[in-house]
Image 1 (tube, helix red, strand yellow):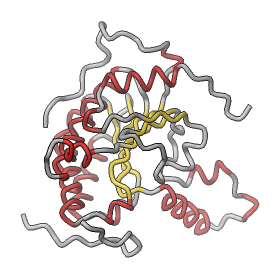
Image 2 (cartoon, rainbow, N blue to C red; image 1 turned 180 degrees about the horizontal axis):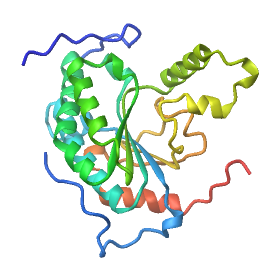
Image 3 (tube, helix red, strand yellow; image 1 turned 30 degrees about the vertical axis):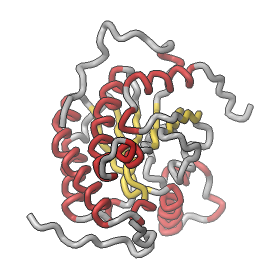
Image 4 (cartoon, rainbow, N blue to C red; image 1 turned 60 degrees about the horizontal axis):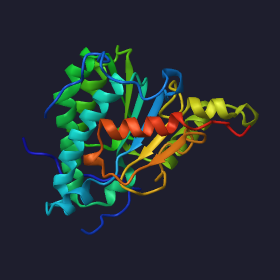
Amino acid sequence: MTRAPLVRPTDAPPAAHGSGGSLDEGRPADLPPVAPRTDLPGHVAIIMDGNRRWARQRGLDELEGHPAGVEAIREVLRHARRRGLRVLTLYAFSRENWARSDDEVIGLFGLLEAAIRNETQELRAQGVRVRMIGRTNELPQETRASIDDALAATSDGTEMLLNIAFNYAGRTELVDAVRSIVASGVTPDAVDEALIAGALYTAGSPDPDLVIRTGGEQRLSNFLIWQSAYAELVTTDTLWPDFGAADLDAALQEYASRQRRFGR
């Protein structure tokens, strides 16, 4: 099937220069705990960074890092389910990523479509509900159709919520929230934190307890900037395609070792 030409959002950055596995059944009896269950986060958000560097280090084309990154998602998602995490949010494509080449952007869209098609039934079987957060209306029709199918098929999942941040930016989310609030006609004195939180893409789910960033960088990169106000941050030099169950456990252990004061 011939894909329609790529249409970029009008306010997106200008163009810049240049399946395997399935979710495991529950928590294995021999899976050792990393910390008391009460000390583990309920919501983990991950900035998946380093696909292109991973490919370059291996003498591969940069685009080959993205399929490897999808494989890492499968392992991390399986392990998050085994650890009993209730919400997992993955930063898959930022609105700033529109600045990359057409080949890379189209390739990322294709990977999302393929991953959704290949994994939806297994996610449904494991009780995982998929939610897309971001401006999905700006995506190509083929991508939106795959997303809509996944959302419908997994809508009754109750074991875990999987948020996929695709065509997402934290400041854009706040802009959209403000627009929604203004359009609703509320008076200024009725605007409070709860009203704003209820207008965000993530409305109805808890804020992240832990934000993990791979690839050695130590910044949020416009990711969940409202919701992460009191999240614990863990960064690792591990590039995303190499991030696996042991790395997730290490981050969970680091989280469990901290004392959260929430400004008190």
